[in-house]
Image 1 (tube, rainbow, N blue to C red):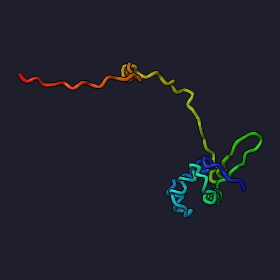
Image 2 (image 1 turned 90 degrees about the vertical axis):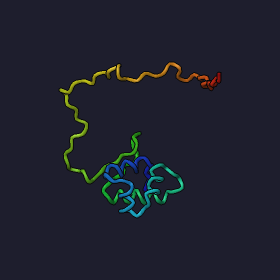
Image 3 (image 1 turned 120 degrees about the vertical axis):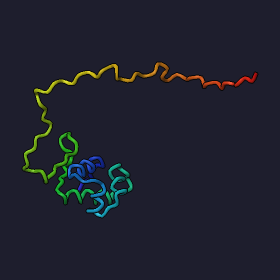
Length: 125
């Protein structure tokens, strides 16, 4: 079994619609460990494999790279369900430019050093 990259494990969790807390509850792995596995901490290969196995038992299939392509993730929980993804309404208007009056402009002295304000002294007469 190939070890799945950390970012693919995170995608698998999100495909299942689970939070790190929910994975902790169902897989028995602490949320902190799940977070570290998803960040790619290298000293946790046994936990990465446990997380991977939990996702596979939950319906995720990891597709290893082949033919010059990267990793793939297939969610068997959604197999056979018709979903419309990334459909755009062709009759929708194009996005207009923002009103320039409400856009905050950058200060002209950006990146330049400013002199600190001098302390004003009070003159007693």
